Image 1 (tube, chains in turn green, brown):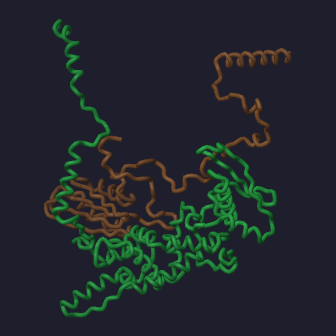
Image 2 (cartoon, helix red, strand yellow):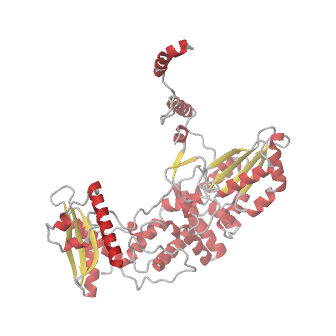
Image 3 (tube, helix red, strand yellow):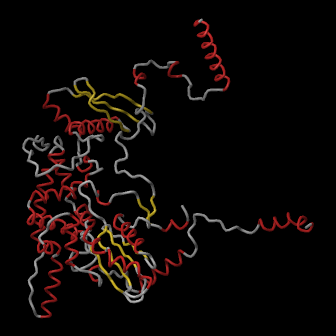
Amino acid sequence: MAFVRRFTPLLAKTFLNIPINTQGRRIHRWVSPTLIELKYREKKQGGKVINPRNTFLEWNLEAELYAFGKRLNEEFDSDLLLQAFTDRSYVIKEEMKQKEMEFDLKMKDNRELVKEGEKFMEEYIQLYLEAVLPKFPVEGIVGIKNHLMSESVLANISLHLGTKDIILAAEYPVERQILANTFKALVGALLQSSGDEQSGHFVRDFVITQLQGQDVNDYWHIEDPWTMLTDLMSKTGSELEPRLIGEVGKNTLLACYRVGLYLDKKMLSSGFGETVATAKEMAAREALKKIFATEENMYPINFKLNGIPKSTSDLRYKISAN
Amino acid sequence: MSNKNMFMKSAFVRAPLQNGVGRYVCQLQRIVLKFCKSHGGSRGIRDFIEQDLVDFAKQNASVVVYLKPRRHRGPVLVAEYLNGDRVWMNVQNKTHSEITKWMEVLRTQQGDISGARLRKYQYTDYPSVQGPWTPFTFKDPELNVATLPDPKFGANNRLSISATEKLRLMFEKQAISEKDVKTGE
C-alpha cells in the first residue's frame, strides 16, 4: 500500500501526457479518402447511373394516375390525364421505335392542353390578383402574374405534386421546362373534365398560394418612384413636399438621412438612406406602397375567394396611360 | 450537435409547397412493402398485409401501395414522398401493431424527417413587418423641439445605480413611510 501511495503522483504525471480521446466537432480522417474513392469509382463507371422510377418492377402507371387525381382531390378524365402527362419528346421517341418495328399506333401529346391551360391560367391569375389587390396598378399585377407563370415557379409546383416520375418523356430526369409544361397541361385537362370554376380553384390553391409570405412589391420594379408619385398627386391637386427630418453622422461613412413626405402639411411617409436623394426615393417608394395598399404590414392576401372574380381592369389605374 | 449529425442534410421547418394554405395534399406518394412469404421475420408484416392493408389503401387513395414478395430476405418498408425523399425502414421481427404504428408515421410525415438536421426551430420568409432599424427608429419625439445642450438629455444615465445610491434611496423611502404613519394618528 505504501508503494502505491509513494508512486501515485508519478503515475498521474505519466497519464497526463497520454491524449484522451474526446468527442469534438471534427470531420474524421477517413471521410475525405472515402469520398474521393467513391467519386473515382463513379467516374470510372461513366457518371452517375440514374434509374428512372418508372423502369422499376414495382410500377403501375394506371394506379399512379388514379392516385394522382385522388391526391389533388380532383376528378380528372383518365384519358386526358394520360395525355397531359405525355410530352412531345416521348411521342417522337415512340414513333421512331414503331417505325423500326413497322407498326403504327397513334399517340396524343400534351401540346394543345398546355396552350389551353396556359391561356386559362393567365386569365384567372390576372382576375384573381385584381380582386385581392384592389389598389395595385395593372403593371404591378402583370409583374406578379409573370412571376407566378415563370418556369421555375411552375416547375417547383409540378415537382411537389408528384409529376416527376409519372411524366412520359424521352429522357430522365425530366427538364424543368417539361415539368412546367406538364402543370399547364394538367390545368388544361382539368378545364376539359371539370369546368372552369373547379380548375380556377385548382390554380388558386396551388399557384396563387405561392405568394404566401412573399412581398408583392418585389415583382414589380419601379424605375423612378418620385415621378410616378408626383404624377399621381398632380391629379388630386394636393401639394407634395419632401422635408429632411433627420440626419445622423453627416460627412462620415455611416451617414444616414431621413426624409419625410408631407401631403398638405400632413405626413404621408418617410424613408431613410445614405444620401438625401436615396432617402427621398425611399420615402417615395413607401408612399407608393401606402397608396397601393401593399405595405409591409398589409393584411395577408385572401386565398379563399370562390368562383371566377369579375374583371376590374377598366377602372384600374394604369401607369402607362399617363 | 454530435459528430454524427454533421453528415446529415440540414433543413428548416417548412411546409412543402405551402401545403395547407390552399388545400391539404398527403405528402406520401407511394409505399412499397417488401417481405418474404415464408420467413419468420416477416410474420408481422404478413399479418398487416392480410388484415389491414386493404383498409389502408382504401382510406388513403392518394398513396400507391406496392407489394413485393422476395424469397428469404428481410421485410422492408420503402416510402416515397412528393419532395423526392425516400425513407427505407427495416421491419424485421416487428409485430403487427408496431408495423401499423410505423405505417401511420410514414403516412403523416412530410419527408425524411429523421434524416434531416434542423438548423433552427423557426423559419420566416418575411423577417420584419417594421422594416430595418435606423438611428431614428426608437428616437424620443421630445428631442425634436429641445434646444441642445440640455441637461435633461445630456445626463449620463447609462451607468447602473451604485450601492450607496441604492441605500440612500431605500433610506429616503423609509423616512417618507414613517412620516405617513405619524400623520395617520
